[in-house]
Image (cartoon, rainbow, N blue to C red):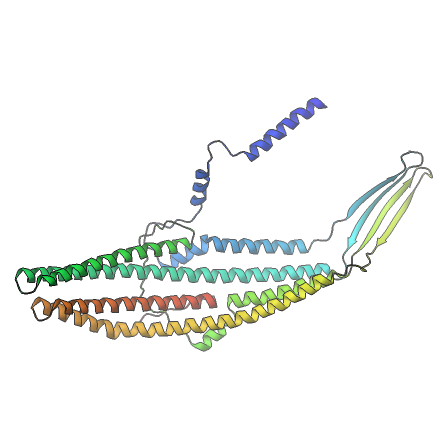
Length: 430
């Protein structure tokens, strides 16, 4: 026997060691490389909003975690439907064979008080809560992608504006240089122009840095730390539509976060019913056979056991579950108030941003452009000083930057409404 046991023991130890020891040459670098390879990597092409949302919905780690949670909760329902296992009991009395008594019996617990149905109800409400959590997570991720996407569009536009400002500043420097060379203005004007050009170059560097950060925030929504897409392709000047307040109020009643809070109340109530059912003890039925060697016969054994709930009536767990129900109801009320306030703020922000963007686009920017063109042309012919050109240029760039900020705020507010209501906010071309 020892000859067979020793090789088996050595084989088991070798298998255990091979399972615990990583393969030769597999370092942490290779492991991290495999983990990075599993992440979604977008192609090096222009990226649309729909493509970005699809990437996030398919490869977001947060959404994947919520899906696994739903699958885990679904397994709880399968387990809640299972009956308790029977147990086999074997007993031997007396060591002497002539007077020995042997007993073999099966003990089957029987649940009372509706424990099984209460467990199944609690599992079903847990599935509803996990499904609502998944919907809320999808709305949150979609809103995050929309916000990050329009941040990239805004950053790209800022870079373009900074480059345009650089061209204007370089043109102003050239004109100032020519006028100084012709003796028409003081060399101080050329110095002012060069200082303004240097300031614009710094703004361009800052705009490019903001664009790089915005690209990384967008690609991080689908798990890619190093963005590969060429640019975000879209029209930032397409303003989101402003829905009616009555429509928002109706849609708020079915918001994912609010639905999740309602299902949490149902789940807590179902768990409280589970604790109530445990106050009734379960009984156990025993069936078996007893063999008496001394008498030379078999005897049937039938038993019934019921615990007496004198000391432990599960009162503390029942009270705890009831307080959890009260807590879930208060959290539901707090969620309703919070979402209503957030929706009102997002609606007002979207309304104000739309009005600001429309006013800037129709009135302010055309006027600032005309003023700059007039000042620039007048400076070339000696009718205006360079300070007038700088002031007009600064006004034009500020108007365009303010218009871009208003567009970004409008899209961010629309994304907040999307996150709260769980549905995409329609857009209309202005």
